[in-house]
Length: 317
Image (cartoon, rainbow, N blue to C red; front, side, top):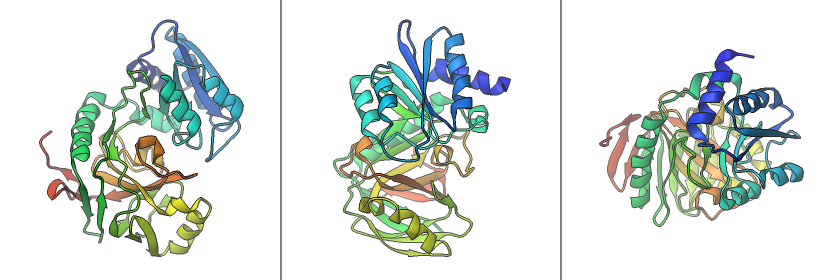
């Protein structure tokens, strides 16, 4: 066992999960991630918390397996150390509504545990809270980049969310590593071009930019070297996988783009647009997929106020 991975696991459990004596702490995993999950299992028990692990089959998308979900239904707190994401599932949402505190960690690796779980979460919380408040108050979001992005989204009536890593309250939910402020924009509005020059999560890192044209919140055209492969990727999922579902801003300085969506969407100085499911974040769109598209060095306007200029955060922190 890597001492650094084990120590980072202990730190994340003690700093982020707010476990109390007598609580049932669950490590939820799959057959591909069980070796890493065992290190969190040991860390939890070594810290003196009653920690159990349940391992299900490998799943990239869709609902949590039934027997695994039944175990989650009894947990007070849970770390999901999985290959695919269970973030946008009904079982996860039901557990959160019941009061379970959940950290979703899809695709996490030993490298990510070692290098990113030691972030300054006080700073992540401060920046995320400021941006979430700004997103809640805004009606129009405009994103531009020197690469050619010029996209307008609308968020009136929706609430911003800060992913801070501090899962201390009943029913708290977020990613670890944490670090984003996000909002579910109105799903059937939004027009313009999005030039993706970072990563499309679950698809690929973009060696060549991909240009997506949106009309009424929906992708209507794709241009670029990888356009046909991207169309094939999206065609695997329900039709709403073409509709906008999230606007997010990375807030974690410890993260770097590495080709892993769990980390890439948190990178400070980037934003991401997602398509697919947003029921988990106050939206109205169901889908069997949620994929984030990371944009480097963006300029962002909220109701005409520039808050990020070429990747630099310029609001009052």
